[in-house]
Amino acid sequence: MDDCIFCKISKGEIPTEFLYEDDRAVAFDDINPEAPVHVIIIPREHIPSFNDLGPEHKDLLGHLSLVMKEVARLKGVQESGYRILTNCGTGAGQVVFHLHFHLLGGKRFR
Image (cartoon, rainbow, N blue to C red; front, side):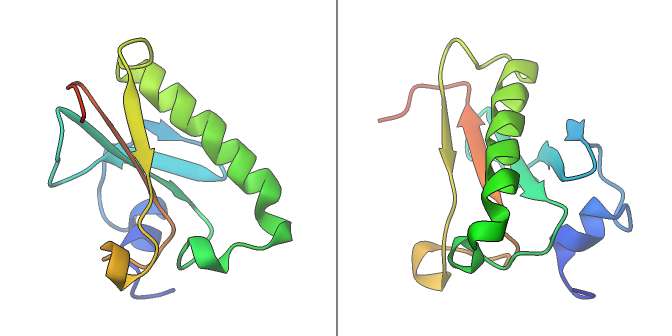
């Protein structure tokens, strides 16, 4: 997707400091954090939303899960606790239509 901001970030077209990077995923701090730790984890592959996942993505989802765990460790919230969420569709608050997960931590959630 030529106009997808997350695709541009993952390709290095928009300068971003990656907290984690491999051939399948990247993670970076959210520019508008909602918690002391707020990281965005995305697959490099453009997938618009959770609804667009298919059986061919099961290995990618497993990989992303391990990336989230590693990011929590790198950010120092693995033991204290963290929240992982994704918004699916405009009604849920999805703004960027590239599958992404928010990892939030560093405070107590209700």
